[in-house]
Image (cartoon, one colour):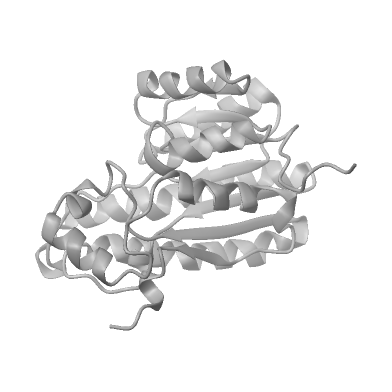
Length: 257
């Protein structure tokens, strides 16, 4: 019997922002499918908890703390992965920030620059360091966790949406540049998911009621419901897919208003 196209044995994955939420669920599922996983976020202790859990289930995980807004730490993450595992096949750009909640015209330059730096520029840094290593090995997969915020307008998280729309464009351009080297680049655009990152949105009862009322599945998502798409894009099941965005939002962007 041939192996499953979702089998990731022999692959090495880096997942940023993987101490909790979508990143954690993705790291755990990648490991369950056989990948060796580098767990990374700003706090090493929180990453260690995730790595310990993966090892307890028989997986292989390594911790490298990284603040994605600092280039030297991004370089240390990729270089440390190569040093520890000898290769890098899968990059999941999940870490992001949103320090501002309010009208676009009131945002400070500092807040806007922080959003664009962490949510877009860091992905360029990560890709520029990781993709050539993948190409040397004959291919790889980069997965950018974007958001439906990049597809829709918002009166409160507009700057975040701008950064996520930029990630769609980054994905398409990198896919064109590196497709000839068999490196695939795709995005996932989740809707509202029950994570600490999105807490301000789903803890607001009025907002949650409005959202679920216009969502065909009548609920918000859970982190593990995004992780399956990460594994799909990381695996041989998606070898003819690049430059694309998978929307996972319970149908909210398709619903009639």
